[in-house]
Length: 101
Image (tube, rainbow, N blue to C red; front, side, top):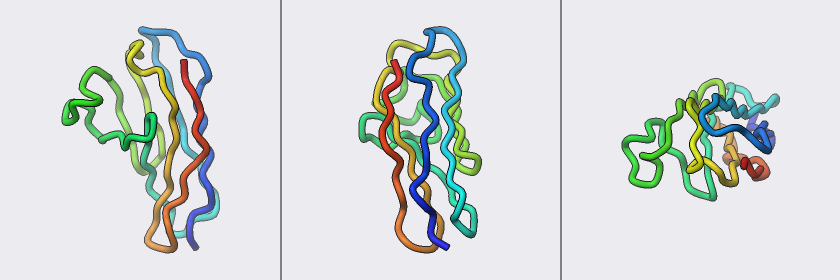
């Protein structure tokens, strides 16, 4: 079963220096989908240190659970976040974008 449109659970405001957890949920896909996150339309790498765009950010991304955890959060992390669910059936589905300040 292809994934349905996932829902991004993003805190609208978060405190710099704290821990922020963003979650992506999708209920219909079978096999269970894997998740990718986008910030301001750019795909976020699993390891931020591998990317010039995200190297100032400190986060862990779990493609299986859909969790994106910033620890600590920095001012650099403000932006519009969306997630995408993919399995080997049908086309990837992307959530609406939510802004985190």
